[in-house]
Image 1 (cartoon, rainbow, N blue to C red):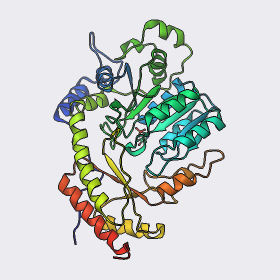
Image 2 (image 1 turned 135 degrees about the vertical axis):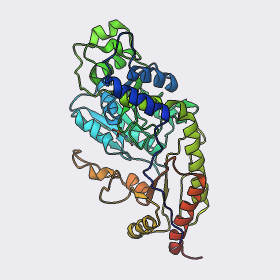
Image 3 (image 1 turned 45 degrees about the vertical axis):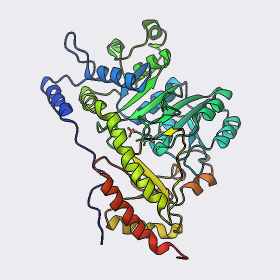
Image 4 (image 1 turned 90 degrees about the vertical axis):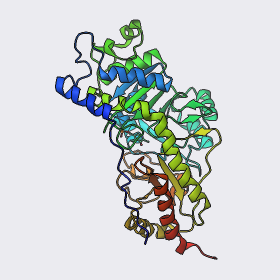
Length: 399
Ligand SMILES: *Cc1c(COP(=O)(O)O)cnc(C)c1O
């Protein structure tokens, strides 16, 4: 029996340049981003400059995690305790968690069968809730029609925070995800597109939002040491009214990320070669259903989602177990109980008046998810697809 032996959670090593530079930092001991020798620019500030330039945004503020970047993003959009925040219901737990952490209230929006936020439902919920902010997760790299989405947001005067944890480097109509809304959040947690263990960025083009994010991130009055810096008079306006949330990035993580920046474009191509191999195999497989991607979307295929259409939901747990025994690790977004990183919206019980979202449930009911680490190659993808095809085969009737 064909068995796959590589772990789905193994990322690549940190580039040698990053390891060398990390050792230098450990030797001189200046790990804090504001602890600089005379004339020195910190690793975090250099990273902020480099990421802003790569992203095509005016400002970048490095943070301790992607979740904290989201939280700062909501704050700089003016969200306060008691405010409603629209969010697509298909996302990861830190997203509603970021809304809840500032005392705001998530208003969950349905997704469509292709895993994007349902734009008609967004329009309806914007009108019904009166919310002035949308926290949009480009969940698992699926980017909605951003032209239509932004025009809905504009028509209600809604600010948009883009959660780009799965879309660093992805584009819609040639424009980078993160450059549509007012602010964007990125994650450099181990399983995302760059790996510093934990970490994140907030990007924006807005002077005042950037200044607020810098002070919120915990700059004290050392904000002038930031890599991308709004004008002084903007700080003068907001610095005493903006709370310090202490969620900075440190130089060790920054240097680890900096060493990965030169490989990012090439890694995106590598992800897409793996993704496209798997996509072609799943598309040709009976018993499996995989939504087509938009023409306008340039994705980064660091994970893949498909439906087990030949199986009943009752069949799925045993199927997943059989795949796991053969080394293929799949997550099920339709499960009633949250497991590991994967949870469905109805398990976030702290949300008041949790709605019933039948379209989201239907879209996720038979959806499984698979990570695609860069430690795999295209031959590995073929082995994985063969194992899945083998395990689905008994469920295909009428053959
Ligand atoms: C990982 C992730 C986050 C949070 O990032 P952390 O860096 O782990 O805090 C937010 N949204 C989505 C969709 C994610 O996958």
